[in-house]
Image (cartoon, rainbow, N blue to C red; front, top):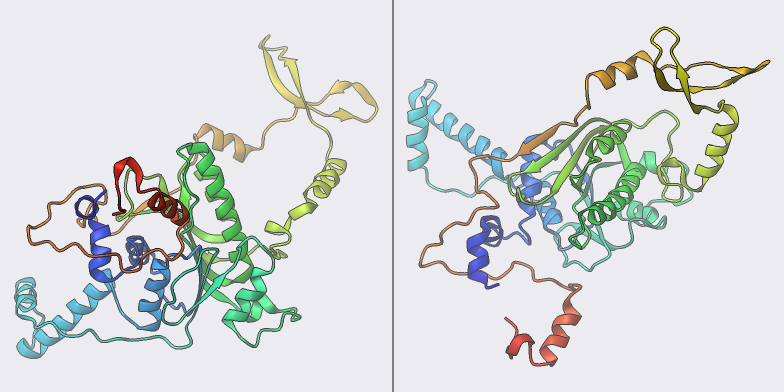
Length: 399
């Protein structure tokens, strides 16, 4: 597909090149920050599956350079205009006066407020072009050796033999925008994405400080409510969010987890994911030895004369007797009230561009090249073979 047609189809793809972003996904992180204030009090960030680096670029410009975007920049601009009008009129300006001042305002360079002691580490298996202030690691987020590499990147004086490594090297925010190459088989894509999310979450649990934040891409499916309930074990607030720049036709969404509060006695490790690892079979056997065996049974109600499915357990000394087990009251109420649904929130200015819409371009439109072309795309070898063969479908050159 030609550049001009793609520019016309996707407004955020065009805006990313105009504003200097490496990919349109930068707007997704900015819109999530507008809604949840992700960057508040944040100085140590880990960006997982970072290539090509659009989210790391946002972190660099916001945290290291001190730039402001979106709603934050608009609020600062409005406050600056209000202060200027207060000096002129001496009273609180009206909306009409603010609008007039906006038209007459001369564009000035925004005041930058960089943060101190910022540490940002980007991790990906694919190579990524360097960014100012970003430490890039080519590593596997599922491998246990990644944690020492990450902690050493955050603090060069890190001692692997220290017992308090997680407590002394806290991370405020962990991001993951990774996704597999989709196959079109929805159930398979959701499964592979869930495994990627599991790896990112387990690494986040190893390095997050109490009160930290975790944001990751998910594919919406039938088990979103289950995922929400599982993450609520570790985080005080969990929300499934859909940024405005994410196409409505896409199944992608983002799970936003705020205020990390690990359970008492929980210790994360990549060797034993979620604290279980290869001990799951042993734990299951111990649990089976402790708990009585329950089996399904069909009992007749003598009063109603009907049959119902239930469970029973043998009682010592009463081999021919069964005891009917009922559900707890809270579980019965939950079933009566219907299925509980996880909260879903739309992020970003709803009056902004629609990612699924096509917009007409002016005649004097100049098509821009990507800010950062792919460094080592997985299809690079295929393009080289196609070029050597003279191009596909009669083409003699690549566009």
